[in-house]
Length: 285
Ligand code: SF4
Ligand code: SF4
Image (cartoon, rainbow, N blue to C red; front, side, top):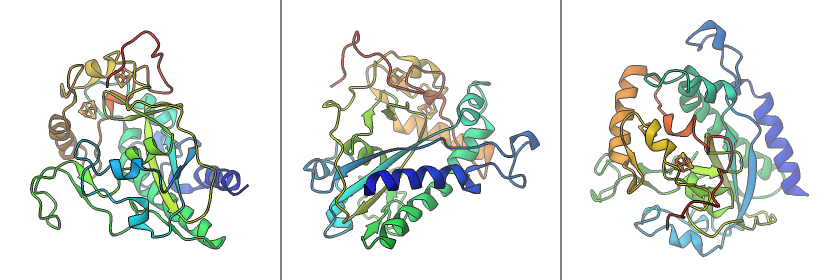
């Protein structure tokens, strides 16, 4: 079947691409060279006409900037969403020093994200070669995001902040990959440490039945990420403050330029590599 072939091909592409490994010329330390950034991906499929896409336009979801699959690709039928888990090199390296970002995490956030753009384009080409239309919003020139209100000169509405016209985490939620967490990551069956990508297509693929109904079903609300955050940006009462987090990440940008990152809330926590136990803790609504 097409989706099984696509998944196998994607796994092979990620495993064999040189961009998925730290290069000698870019390594911050010689021993980093050759280490892998991403493990094998998880792949799920959403229905391009799922009513939940329109719900993403709500200000409490992604916001009015969000475009549905049909708005990106008229005639869209399916959305392929994947989670690329960070390797042990990336995750373990970010646990060692609570005051410093691990080298692996820095590579994964910058070179790794550039690689995932290539992965998205690879998926587009793979589907197009089989006669389908395919489009990756995040990796297109039309992708738009607003970091803090007023920071995007192309978007006139100064009330918008921390929003975008395509959010990979929200897309992953709709496609059945996982649920949100207190730290505002997305917890998948392989945990929260990793990155997401997606492609919209007119290929008819078997839709994944979401194994959850609540936004936070997979988060145990254990509070470990609250204690890990160096910026005090997460609380059990209010979740994550994007403003506090982004202020801290701006400092990390200055410290590690041209790379950046933090991710302390995604390592050394029960949801790092899987779904934590949630049967004894109350759900957040
Ligand atoms: S560390 Fe605990 S509270 Fe924080 S996101 Fe993970 S499961 Fe949820
Ligand atoms: S990325 Fe860093 S600053 Fe932001 S919430 Fe996570 S631990 Fe806190």
